[in-house]
Image (cartoon, rainbow, N blue to C red; front, side):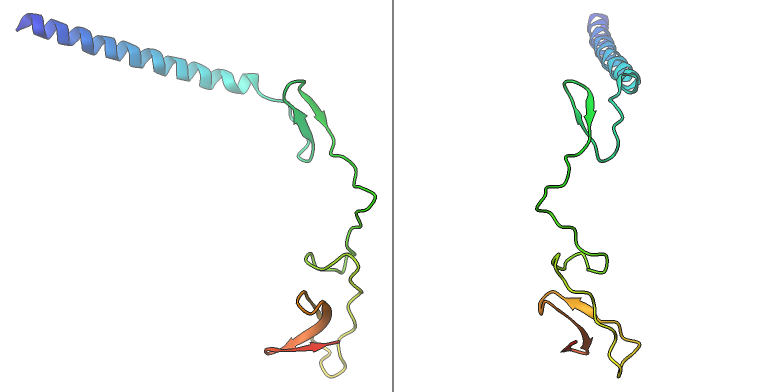
Length: 114
């Protein structure tokens, strides 16, 4: 019985030693990782992993036309400015409807183009 107990103690001791070595290695990696770190680029810039160089984004292409300030984000770039509110509803602001591709107002479920 004592021989069996000694054998079990050795197996348990080896397991604890292996687990301890693994935990120590993981702790060392966790401590060293922030020290190794990566280059801090601006949020819109890109970083080359191999050369560790930050580069700005490429310029906008010549064909790109940004939409006007008054245009909603889903409207095309050549959307006309919104018309003034109708005289019969001065408190209602016209909205751009992507389905009709026009400015207008919604009165319930009816679309009224302006």
